[in-house]
Image (cartoon, rainbow, N blue to C red):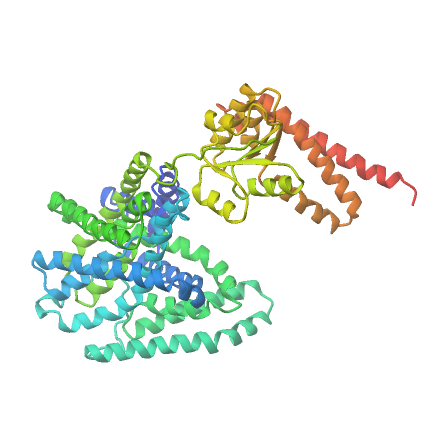
Amino acid sequence: MESFLYQASIYLAAAVIAVPFAARLGLGSVLGYLAAGIIIGPVLGLVGSETENLQHFAEFGIVMMLFLIGLELEPRALWDMRHRMIGLGGAQIVVSTLALMGAAMALGQPWEVGLAIGLTLSLSSTAIVLQTLSEKGLMQTGGGRGAFSVLLTQDIAVIPILALLPLLAASVPTRWQGGPIPTHGSEGPAMSLVDGLPGWGVTLVTIAAIAAVILSGIYLTRPLFRYIHAAHMREMYTALALLIVVAISFLMTLVGLSPALGAFLAGVVLANTEFRHELESDLNPFKGLLLGLFFITVGAGINFNAFFSDPDGLIELALLVILTKGLVLYVLGRIFGLKGRDRWLFTLSLAQAGEFGFVLLAFATQQSVIPTDISEKLMVIIALTMLITPLLFIFYDFLSARMRDPKRDLPADTIDTEGPVIIAGIGRFGQIVNRLVRASGFRTVVLDSDMDKIQLMRRFGFKSFLGDPTRPELLNAAGLGKARVLVAAMDNKDSITRLVAYARRERPDIHIVARAHDRTHAYQLYRAGADDIVRELFDSSLRAGRYVLENIGLSEFEASNAAKTFYTHDRYAVQQLAEVWNPDIPASQNAAYINRTRELQQELETALLNQVLEKDKQPA
């Protein structure tokens, strides 16, 4: 027991140290967990025989991840994405599997082993890719959406792959069978209901188990949750959520299948129920911790003897996997209409093998489809491709910075009109300003560098011009020398700051209204010379605060006065703090900034309190 607790402490300490460090370097949490496992395992040798015991807990992280993925995949959402998932995602899995299978067979593997290897390596890393795309703000790009569709298809494809592997075991040559089960993998019970069954029998049992999970999800969960709800005990919801996952896992292992299979299906079945969000909130903490523990055990169990016995060969094989998948992805991206940066993002983000590869590899080895010595090498290859992934994103950044954007390289329009108001940027912010000003009877000149936005405005009857608003010749053509008001409303905050600074130098008398992305940006704009600075969320947040005051005891008039006082004081506070703000010193380390902030907050509280006291003094 003492040894187990010691090992668990080592694992948790490694995670706490390595993962935040990896996140700061931009490597992502999965690589942090893998690196932590490698350090405490092969490098320092701090973990030993208890690794297998910890794995029994850690593997539930994979099960819970699949269950939660299933909860997020509502059948209706899946149906809406069917064309991209079946076309792009399905083609990626099939073509990548065949290409990698061919490579494995060319290296001397039987077709059954080659197919299992191709299926295992065809899947990419959902955790690494989605996190990196989100961190870099690339999720809503064409390449990001394409990558998400493929990852979603891959997550779903894990289920039929798990069902297919036992059939491959039935036909694999006997010389591959009978090897020991590797360190990593979901070990089934000592005796299984499918022991001794032929391949078709295993498939029938699989179908029956899947049907049982689906029917239970449809007909049993609602009565169970109503029963638990009647107890009014919060911890019982967590207990029931864990019971669902554990019971499904036991059922799957009882019939000789991966518990992830039933967990995913149960999640999809429960996605449309009213208990979906309750289950997500209850299981997310367990999923994150156990999934991280799983990756640590993977890193700790990597056989570096196999790596050091042939490091050049394994690195070459890892690069071969990346190049093969990358070529397939690039061609598919071209076929499905991805261009330029989007195609390269789609290609480079998905070229690695992923965490599900570890799961499928362990299961395939347990089913005697892949021999143990090859499994150990594949473990290293998968880990290497994941470790190379940050370099692929760096390479994408390098390419992206040097690629021309066709939309932004279009020649600017010839501006043939002038008006008292110039609006630079016609996105969600600028279009509201434009509609209000034009509806009030004033002419505007609209500039934007995004052709899609310009075309949309023209479609609705608003005249606008394509061009970069920060270019002096375009501003002058739009009438900067005669305009009375300039509205800087672009999406890029650096462009807004440059535009304000230039306009103030050229026209000291023009009134500048500038969109600020946050408070720090407001300080920059104040120093650049903006007259009115509008923070994106300030007014909407202020209105929400007024609604709160109206519903906790203040009248509409009193709440409105409080909001007006706050608004006036905040404008004054921004000017005051801009004077002591230093862009080279973090605000938390700027003593003058901190002291002035405290003084201004005290002034605000005093002003609002005086309003309340004045109200109380008034006669009823």
